[in-house]
Length: 101
Image (cartoon, rainbow, N blue to C red; front, side, top):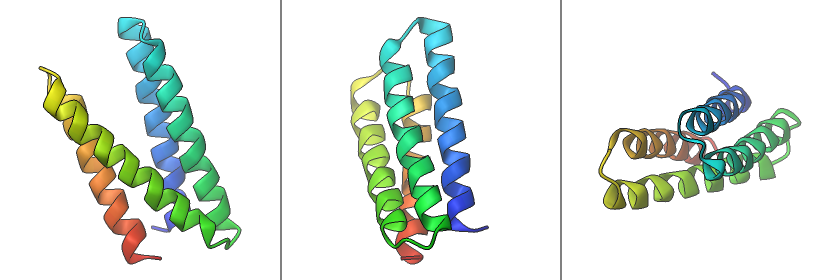
């Protein structure tokens, strides 16, 4: 699977997750954070698709931020499922983007 498709899939999954957080708990922070990450991943996918080297760097940076966010959330919340998902997705995509730079 190519890097740009992974970025587009991540953008969609993160946006859906943020919307679900808003729908379930009324969390505006979920929608804002999900929108920012989704836009960054979609932009990275577009840049990768256009053969711009900055796309992979943007995808890697976004993945690292997602990974760090997941680790911080894991240490500060009682329910561990969502932070574990952030950690897994962030780690997987960070590794994938780094090995494909």
